[in-house]
Each structure stands twice: as structure tokens, then as C-alpha cells.
Length: 58
Image 1 (cartoon, rainbow, N blue to C red):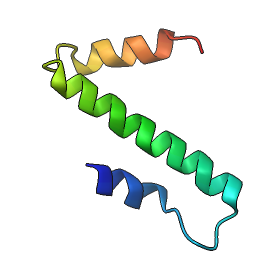
Image 2: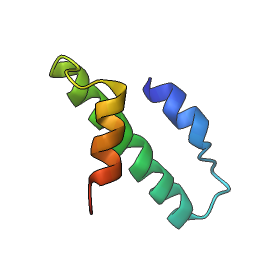
Image 3: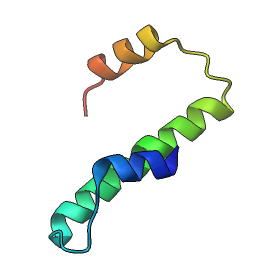
């Protein structure tokens, strides 16, 4: 999964540092969240997750 996420966001050595850092931040954040969700037995359905993320304020 981690490799798939990183390949999808396409961080390259030529990329500006700021862009690479932001892409890396989101990629590893998503990966970490998925690992935690799986460790907890994936209790929420896809619809529940969508509802959670669309209602969460940061």
C-alpha cells in the first residue's frame, strides 16, 4: 500500500522541496491512518468513513 500511494503522488528529485514535503506529508498521513484503521479491525464501512471525513473540521 505504501508503495502504491507514493507512486501515485509521484515525488521526484527535480520537484521543489516545498511540493515534495507536502506530498510526502499527505502520503504518509494517509498510509498511517490506513494502518491504524486496519489494526483496529476496520470497524467503519466506506460510507461511515466518507461521512466522518466530510464532517471533520481541521
